[in-house]
Image (cartoon, rainbow over all chains, first blue to last red; front, side, top):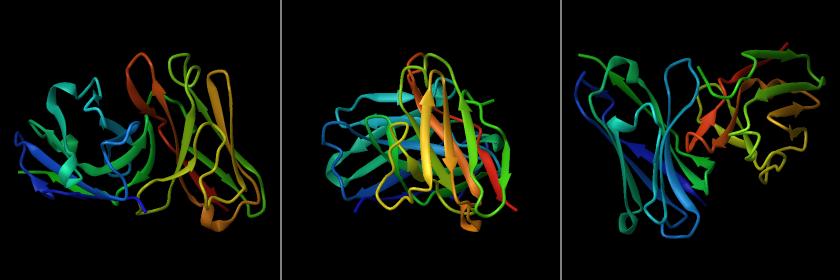
Length: 118
Length: 110
């Protein structure tokens, strides 16, 4: 059974750096074809794909946010970490981590709401 | 503005058949498979259709997907009140090298 859970701050101030951790179980991030990605959803708005890290440490980033994002993995801890710099109120959203088979997102975490406000 | 285009809303009465469209381009839908996700109010999205027309285990066969050229569709037959949700399409984009989502379609069961 694949499960993922996001953790991190619920409130960050503008200009701060956000660090989110995805802790997963039921699969290994060293298995060929497997990836873990991050997707966000501002309140009342659509899904926005952010980043993806593959089993072989290949990484993909949203072009519009690439300069602000870093995704890393710790296979031994079954964790993936996303950092986003220079947070702004428009970055207020629910952030989801998700399991991917190649690019296909199939299992989602429950999401964590991050509010950016001073 | 989303790379994939979906109608913002759709509706139907119980028992009806509803379709939701998703329009893209040659770099995404035209050259890659399409997934569909269902997001019930206040919950995380759930995979509904993968590889254009495949249903994960547990998804009722009332849900079906299709793809033609640079467009895809999700069909829901025998509409039920529990189908009221937001639906999103997604595909890999070869030009952007990222997953692209549609803007979502809010389905209302009248």
